[in-house]
Length: 109
Image 1 (cartoon, one colour):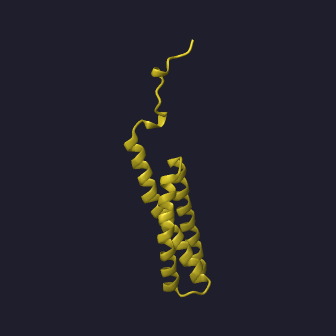
Image 2: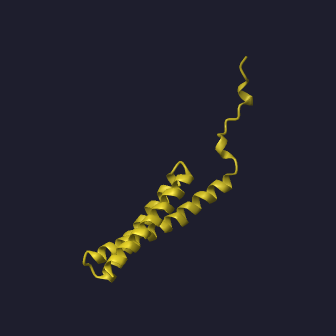
């Protein structure tokens, strides 16, 4: 015996608590994107300074690229299927790049 189609809920199971999901996605995009971009700027500045570029030039170039990276991270987070993956990659990547930047800076001094 089959169930009538009127008793089947056509909405996917993920439609519960939509405000919480939106808040998590926006938080991942803004905060995670910021952390990822900050780590990238720090690492790029340290690597470019170590390669011989002047510090302020390296900082300016890294910051300019960082604006584009933040935009891409923001858009990617909004398009990503799983918010937890976005949080993990953005925060983990930002922390890893910041740690590498710290090691590179220590080797410069």
